[in-house]
Amino acid sequence: MDSKATPFDSEALGSRRAIIRRNPDDVHEVEMIEAWGSNPRFSDGVCYEFIRSEGRSFPSNRCLVPASEFHIRNGEKKFRVTMEDGNFFYLAAIWEPAIGDWPVSYRIITVDANPEVMRYQERHGAIIQRRQVMQWLDCQAPETDLLVTPPAHLFLVKEILTKPVQTSLAF
View 1 (cartoon, one colour):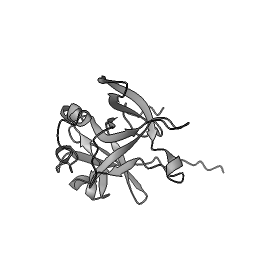
View 2 (cartoon, helix red, strand yellow; view 1 turned 180 degrees about the horizontal axis):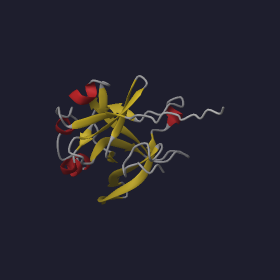
View 3 (tube, rainbow, N blue to C red; view 1 turned 180 degrees about the vertical axis):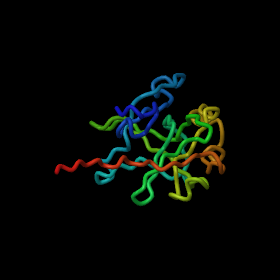
View 4 (cartoon, one colour; view 1 turned 135 degrees about the horizontal axis):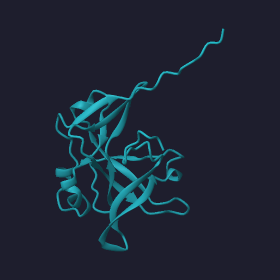
């Protein structure tokens, strides 16, 4: 693992992620399990890790993806997005049960991007703050209150610079 990876770095974990959900066998228990992006068998081999929030309801199989950052691309450039205050957060998601040989999977729910991210892309994952965790998992607040575009000045966006390739010349 890269020594610069943070505990919730999305790229540090590959295509697997830790998700937090209510245990389907014991709804009194909140558990953290490993899950994969949605089953590509149902999407012609394309992994759909995202689902739009608009026009949908998520009354069951809610989960959270812990994060300290997320990455966005704009053309050839790649950017790291973190909370301005440095705190970690959660991305609202739904999980799907294992099917055949495909393990438990998840899809992150997206909302319109906030002003800092909008300069680079139109959408990002719905942010669930730590104080909202149980509201999301247990449907304690209306989805319209939780799946919202975050306010301005919440994120810091920094370009991820790749190290230049060093070449040596022999004379």
